[in-house]
Image (tube, rainbow, N blue to C red):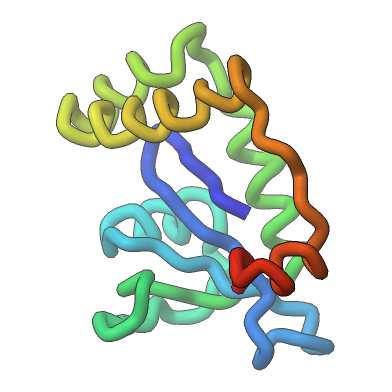
Length: 129
């Protein structure tokens, strides 16, 4: 799951080491983002690990239950009418521009939804991974 918030961007996944443990891995490209998430919403998260050689340079682990509670706290604090404006106010115009690029890319789905391929078809055509 990707999570874009007014305080950061995160990728939340179940890594192979998480399977069967009740944990998921929360990853971020910016240390300040994951620090803000941990401080404000997920104090139960493990220590933040630096992984500069990986696609996400910062990561921590949290139980699924604590993640759910943290996401609920984030949702309860939504008090703005425009997400991008709120991002600019909290994180600056440069971050808002990055988020806007994501918005523009995803907006194309509305006009031209891509055909959905099955995972087997993706693999067979070399498109999957």
